[in-house]
Image 1 (cartoon, rainbow, N blue to C red):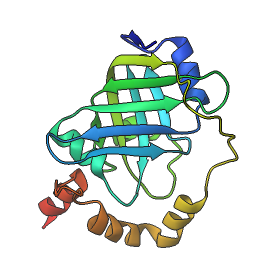
Image 2: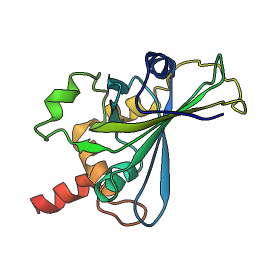
Image 3: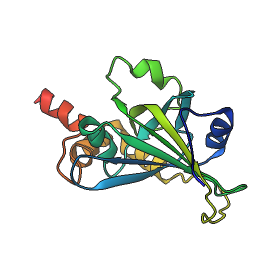
Image 4: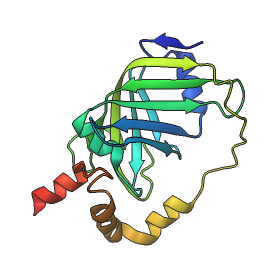
Length: 186
């Protein structure tokens, strides 16, 4: 039932753009595998073999650290409405922090929601679809305001403190790019 492609077709791109949520999977050579759900209008298709997403401040920063070590990641999109389908994008990932020279090249592609922390750009080498017959139907009601409200209420100074405390190392003790930047400053 699975089909494999070298790049995203126009049909794949249309499917991805219609989804309200996606998942990002990453892992270091050892330790925990991480799967993160992502929402908001935070995903962009740059070409049939390149994508990017705006990563917002959260309780961890696993993907960012994993990419430094293994540089492999998977995106997954699932049809919760309409025709069943699961679509995975396999590729690498480049972390772009706001002070990175490449930031402006990508930041203009996104609405910079309060609490943004980095952009992940991925070169895709494999696209795989599968049936999705076991995925239930869900009706989209809208985005939750909680994360955006939380970031706005914290403000940039407290967000920076939060990132230092919660986003500098992974659950396995791997230092993230945010943690490395802090170490370089000290």
